[in-house]
Image 1 (cartoon, rainbow over the protein chains, first blue to last red):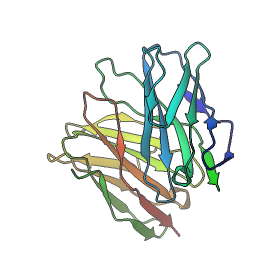
Image 2 (spheres, each protein chain N blue to C red):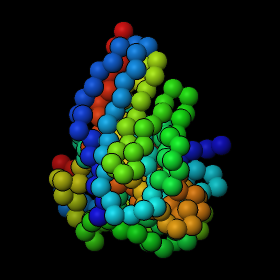
Image 3 (cartoon, rainbow over the protein chains, first blue to last red):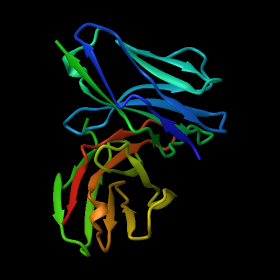
Image 4 (tube, chains in turn brown, blue):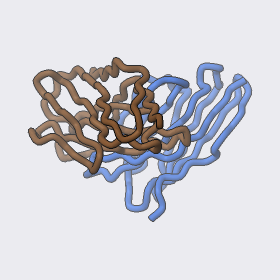
Amino acid sequence: AQTVTQSQPEMSVQDAETVTLSCTYDTSENNYYLFWYKQPPSRQMILVIRQEAYKQQNATENRFSVNFQKAAKSFSLKISDSQLGDTAMYFCAFMKSGGTGTASKLTFGTGTRLQVTL
Amino acid sequence: DAGVTQSPTHLIKTRGQQVTLRCSPKSGHDTVSWYQQALGQGPQFIFQYYEEEERQRGNFPDRFSGHQFPNYSSELNVNALLLGDSALYLCASSLRVNYEQYFGPGTRLTVT
């Protein structure tokens, strides 16, 4: 079974600053995907960024980037130039590869509540 | 392009009752997964449907059952409701050959 651990229950960052959210996971699988989801107070879970385990290059989506360390089983999220709209719960999630890219179940961490302040 | 939709938005039920939650997947998606998110927790996988069959199941009792229709929409049924079933129920859709899951806004179920 896979487990995902987010050790920072809450974090705060000032507007325009950079913040890094931590995530570690445990798995015996070699082929898998990792995700960061954002859940604002509206409750809608929004995909922020994804990383295929077979890719060495870290994924980047605009102000969001990850630091993927496969050997250490670490997958941190960096948010640059933080904005008020980034205030939300952030969940790290793991998905085992279905072999042909088929969708499988997501295993989530317990989340990190991020507050962006002026 | 319509995203994932869920109904109802909120629901209040009494212990012992039964409930049905509904989900319409994102246009073009053929796979639906259901998750339970208790307050302050991450979502927990309940089950996944593809081609009208349950393909994977998480650690949930048989009181939780589902269905997928030919148009790919899905229902989640919970029988004999317990207070502990109070949670946000999230539906996620995906294309079978693609691993990305897109979530709906959820149904908030309160059991009294």
